[in-house]
Image (cartoon, rainbow, N blue to C red; front, side, top):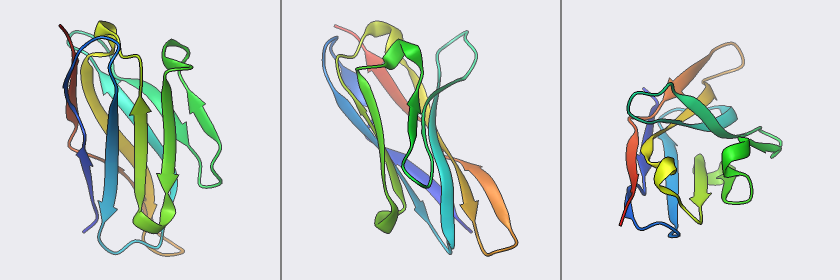
Length: 120
């Protein structure tokens, strides 16, 4: 059973920084693309940032220049560095990954979510 476990959320003042981590544990052959989504109260979930197995990254326009996604394949971990945080970044952040168990089978998995609150 492969699980994704997130950490790093919390309460931060506007202009502050947080780093989210998402680590996959279990029997893993490889991990393809990794991404971070967020959902604010009353809003649809949106893809914030993604990174391919080759390291190519993409971020949504609203966080460009402030958020950076990276991965450590040796640790099966994806990170989201969030700088210059704004109140509108407040949301539950969840990681999503395509985990390959072997050459024939893969699943797309979600983490449990971590709350990020940006407020004075």
